[in-house]
Image (cartoon, rainbow over all chains, first blue to last red; front, side):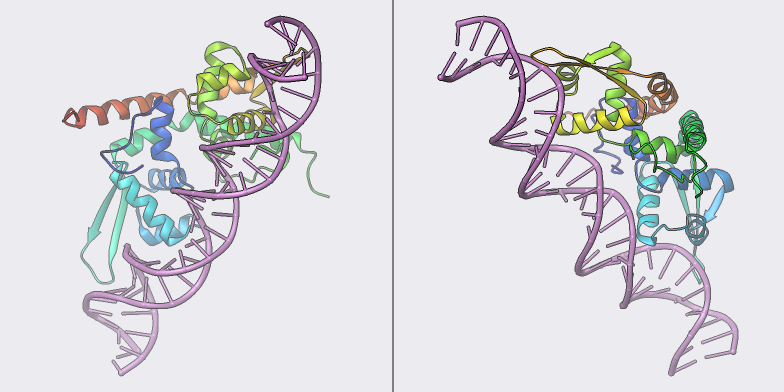
Length: 119
Length: 119
DNA sequence: TTCAATACTCACCTTGAGGTAAGTATTGAA
DNA sequence: TTCAATACTTACCTCAAGGTGAGTATTGAA
């Protein structure tokens, strides 16, 4: 994953897409960046409660190498770095749309099936 | 994952869908079953080169619990078990379509970028 | 002189996903 | 009596994903 050269060969398209989107926080990062357009490192961190700095940076780096995320550094003190989606990142987010809707429907169905779950 | 009761709460739909589709062979199983309609355990195993029996069974059981797969046992000797997709399984496969196409395009782009890679 | 703020970097550890290989149960055929 | 065929089951192991917590670099403000 995340090395521009060695990735494949893939068995199918899902395979190739998963290679880029699998990772505990990646779909959330995708969503945050799509939602806000541009976010600083600290903003992302605060927007994804529970993420560790290590994983956030690691995922961002991989997504940058995979051409999904653009990283803009401002040479200031204290440092300022802004992240945003590339065209590929935005198209991936679109492609994830139907899956997200399916999951939404599933979650609603599960919630409806559990007998109120508050005792 | 795979326990009908305790799954959530999910942050978003992608989250809920990933909970059900993550697993090294699940999307392939989904594809095999969608493609053939019905497959025996041994057929699936042969159709997914590299899968271990342990993982195949484990994934099939989870997908059954998640309501994606139907398991039909024939009381014969030697044993015969047939797997097929439920309506939910088929709809998940549909929802994965755009992601698969995105991955396909990405794989083609990567292949086109690498300079023939045969030296 | 010390501290705050930001975006990392590093070393270490835990956990669980997945692999490997052997064993089980059943019955008909050789 | 042993073997083949099928669909598992079990014990054990490896490895990588991810978590934790501390450290780094820079400069202006107090």
